Length: 155
Ligand code: FES
Image (cartoon, rainbow, N blue to C red; front, side, top):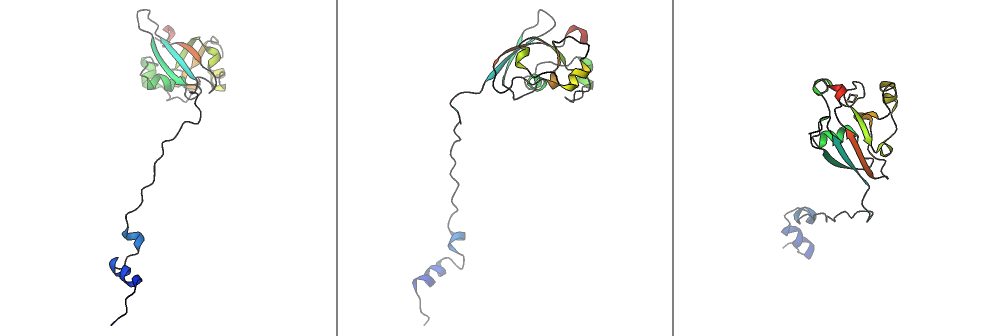
């Protein structure tokens, strides 16, 4: 008769498999990620004015320094492009000039004109920006930016 000890009895129970393959796997414990700071990140409020006076002012909010003006407008379904721009825009590459907007208020909350804008908007008013080159906020500031969208000169 073969001798049987505790180890051989346990091995027989597991049918040749090691206990780690037999026992249910432990699930990782998920711990909700706590915010690192009790303060909320600064936000920029945006208002978009259409060229026609009877049109409604559209509003959006964005975390300061997180997004380009173009992306905020597209994400919020705020019309940016006129007819030609809808069909022929460069997708935010700074090469078509169809995303021109005028900043009515809050210019100081935006990045400086990029080299692309300095080249493209050289002889244009200071208040004109390419929405695809304009970063809204600098991660620290907050306030309100008013944007004139699809100005008359684009129609
Ligand atoms: S989308 Fe083409 S220049 Fe801005």
